[in-house]
Image 1 (cartoon, rainbow, N blue to C red):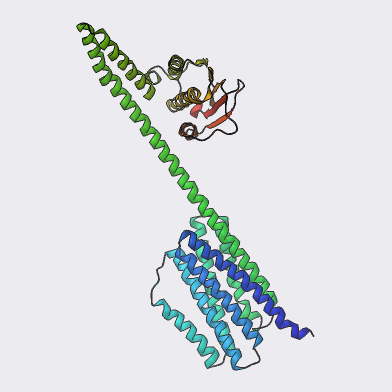
Image 2 (cartoon, one colour):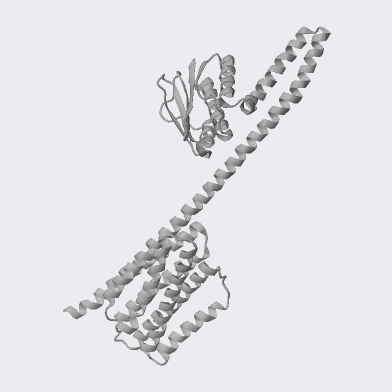
Length: 422
């Protein structure tokens, strides 16, 4: 009773291995569809053909006692083995050296299939056929391991290391078939071992790809941060240039026009020009406050809150005792965040009072802006002003926090690191 069960057990084990191999082929096919890298498609084809190899050996086990039929099944198995090995080799060359497809590669596949036909159907030497094909499969699997070892030196990662070890050990394991057991026996143990290798390759591939995606995302994030920093710097330079032109050229022209109108006795026209001159100066200060460059951060903030209170009728209190010079990059971030936060108070909060608090020690600066308005329900809705504040704070290594204020409105606070203990 035991003997008839052996083929069924072996076939079930081979079917189980084929299923996992097809899963691996599907993983590589999915990676190809996502990233359009040619070697993923080649690996998918290789593992699909590996599953066909298992189907052929299953047919051989069923028909092993049928003479010529068994030889044809064995020929299919040997051909699939050789083509799988060549596809693995081609994928490795694509991956490591970016090798392109050439028509002459078909000759190599034809020679491999021809050798399988000659050794199995011609001279009927199963030992020669099995040994040559398994040596080819083992050699190419080891070569694939070498590719991943080379990649590991260039770009270390857990997934790459796992694949390097898996293909190396799996290549050595392939030598087990012709040398340690005759073909068709001991299938169950070999299948279980191969399934472990297939699972290891699948997991290693996913870990490697996720690691590459993480590194790519980190590089793109860094590039985006650099681009944002350049854009903010360019924006500040443009603001400074426009503010200077408004103050020096437009301001001087309007001042001269006002003087001329005053001398000519045109009081009404002079008043209109005077209001235009005042608006130009206010716009110049909003674009780039001269006090920030000439007098420092605290003086610029005092001028900002005084002007804000005058224009909006919102009482703003500035609380700070730090009159020492601030690092220019930190000072600009603090000023712009306070400016944007006060603008949001005037537009959205409905409050009548606001408080700006500023302090620092040897390692970090802390500041906050809060109001007594109606605040927000839940997280504030993202808008350009809020995103701009977060971006400015993040670029200098700080953190922006929005929360409910004690007075009922919104509290915007940030902590900024100070380089060199300034």
